[in-house]
Amino acid sequence: MKKKAAMIILMLGLVIVLSACADATKNNSEANQSTQQGSGSTEKQAATEKPAESKVDFEKGVFIDLEKENNPLLNDQIKDVLKKNLDAQVSLDEEAFRSTFKDSKTADTYMGSFGGEYKFTKIYNISEDKTKDQILVNVTGERLRDNAIEDAAITHYFAADANGKWSIVAID
Image (cartoon, rainbow, N blue to C red; front, side):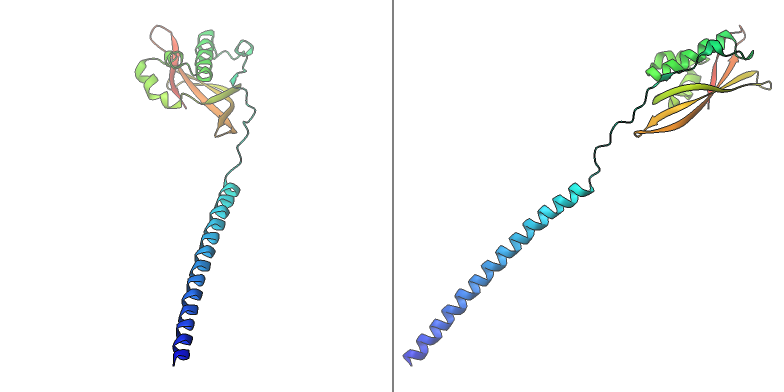
C-alpha cells in the first residue's frame, strides 16, 4: 500500500509540475504573440502611413502685364484697382484687398474669397454688362490647394460711383 500511495503522490506531483509548465509555456506563448502583434501593428502602421508629400513647385504672383491690355473697356482706373486687388490677394494683404471694393459692406461680403496661394497669368475676358453699368474682367491662373495645383478663374465686377470712381462691386 505504501508503494501505491507513493505512486499516487508521485503522479499527482508530476501532474502539478506538468500543469505548471504548461501554464508557463502558454503565458510565454501569449506574451510572444502579443509582442509580435505589437510589432506587426507598428509595421502595418508604418506601411499605411503616407510618405511625407514633397512640396509642389509653385510660384505665386501676378504675371499679367496690364499696360499691354488695349481693350477700351479696361480704363486706367480699373487697371489700377484690379492690380491692387490681385497683388493684395497674392500677398495676403487684407487691408489692401478690402480697399478695392466700393464700400466695407461689399468687402465683408467677399472676404470668403480672400486668401490662398494664387498665380494670376492672364486676363481671359473683358466684357460690359450694360444693364448694370458694370465692366466684368475675368482673370485666370492657378491656385495651390492641398499641395496640388488647380486652374483658377475669378471674375471681377467693376462699377463707377456717382463721382466716376471705379471699384469692385462683386467677385465671382
